[in-house]
Picture 1 (spheres, one colour):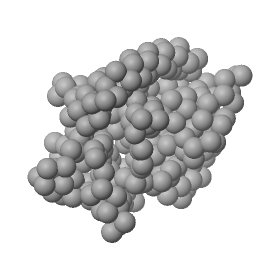
Picture 2: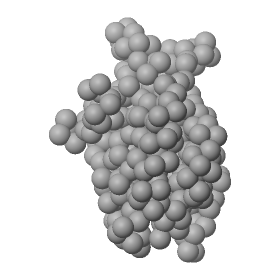
Picture 3: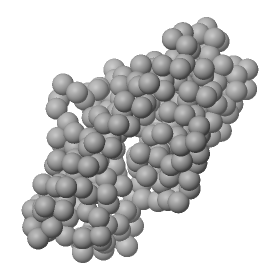
Picture 4: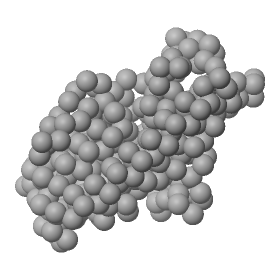
Length: 270
C-alpha cells in the first residue's frame, strides 16, 4: 500500500498476497515467479516475514533484479527481538506508524532510481505520506489513552503487535511467537488462560490472517469475550470502508487498517 501511495498513477503496482493471507506461510506460485521476473523493482518487508520466499528474493537480487526489503532501513536499536525468536528481529515493524514512516524515503529513492522521470512526483507523494503517518501516530496515541491503564493488555493469536504495543502503551501477549509456522502447545494455551484470568482481562482478539479457532477456544476456557478481529499480517479488502465516531476509512489501506485495529482494541478494552 505504501508503494501504491508513493507511485501514484506513474507506475503499475501489484501485490502477490491477497487480503487475509499469512505471509509467514506463503509460498510463491509459478505465476508469482513470472510476475517477479517481469517486475522492474520488487519491494518486500523482510526480517524473515516472508520466510518461505527469502531464497527466491535473494536469487532475483543476485541475478541483477532491483529487490528491496523495506525493513533494511530500520536501525538495529529499533528492532525488537523476543526471547523465543532465536535472535531473529520481529518483522512486524508497521505496527508503529512512526517507525513505518521512517521507511518511506528508501521506497522513494528506489522508485526514483528505477523510474527517474517521475522522481519529483515520488518525492512529493512521499513527503505527504509521511505527514499522514505522523498524524495517524498521534491520533493512535490519544485514542489508546481512553483505555484505563490497568486494562491496557492485548491478547492475540500470535506475537505480531510488539511494535504496536511499544508505540501506543499496551502490554501485548501472543499465544504463538512472532511466526505462525509452529503450532502452539497445550501448555501454551494453558498459560494463556491462566494469564487472562490472573490479569482480569475481559476481551481477547482474533486475527484476519490466522485461524480463529485457537483464540475462540481460549476465550471459552477463560470465560472472556472475543473483542473483535484485528489485521496483523495482512490488510483488509480494498473498498471495505468502516466508520467509527464519524471517521470513515478503508481497511484495505495501511492507514485504515491501523485505525481499525486501534478502534477495535479501544472499544473492547475500555
